Image (cartoon, rainbow, N blue to C red; front, side, top):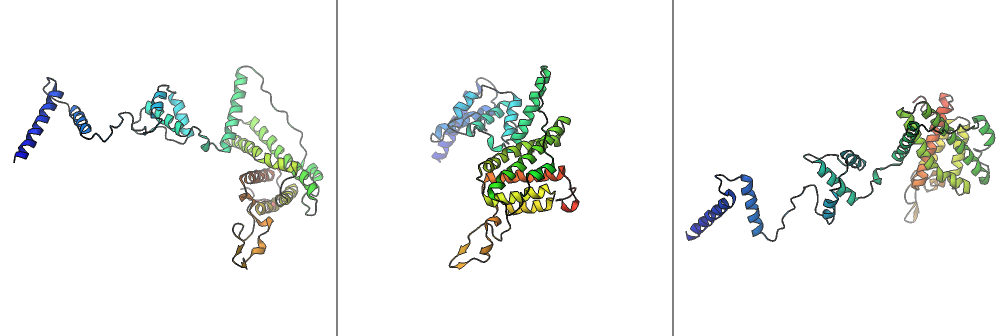
Length: 335
């Protein structure tokens, strides 16, 4: 009974102390003041628990928190903050978030990962280059400067290339002779594609499809550089060089079905098991004799090969569109 009386007296004393401290001569006490008072008493009792920061709940406890709060004084414009968050694939605004808290969240993300290059693809980079070139041309026009356009190249016709690359698809042709022929043909085809894209872009600069086509050309140009370099140095594997000769010969004859078949054999192969072990135990694996170099999926070898094979496929698609032929020799005619 004495214990109960002592507990009641303790509670009364606590209430009286709270009212004296919080009322301050007024006839009422705010609920928020009572909650703050009880929180302080709780922290006094629980000395082992640390007091949480009363800043934004969006900022996580880290060693960079002090530096982050200092940098938050250097505010960017709201448009710039939204642009940077979109580049990183982050939400531009969270529920109940103020513009200042959005900026602090951006600074915290930039400290954790300074570069946002993971979301920047090759195609996006090519599009950005085209936009920048277009803006530069507009600025030159505004300042009264003459925009220098590239002169049109005099490229060989398809019939002239047939004469230059005679025997390119011949399986008995020497490897030393095949390297320059393959390089000459694909360089010519890419230049034709490039000139065609430039002409369409000059005629209609604001068309989205034309802009995307030009971005594909820019991307393919960077993808084909390693291929042309290896052809010039004559270091390209013969297992890839020979099918490229077949593709070039079929494109010159405008037989796009044969060219597509040769491309598929080079890119994904036609072996029963292009990936995996060839020997299990002491017995030879079934179908092991089918695993030759020309059956292997070269697109899986490395990233460089995957990229220039993709560019070759785009050149084939352009060739079918630019040099049309019979529907029986076309891939996905009028698709």
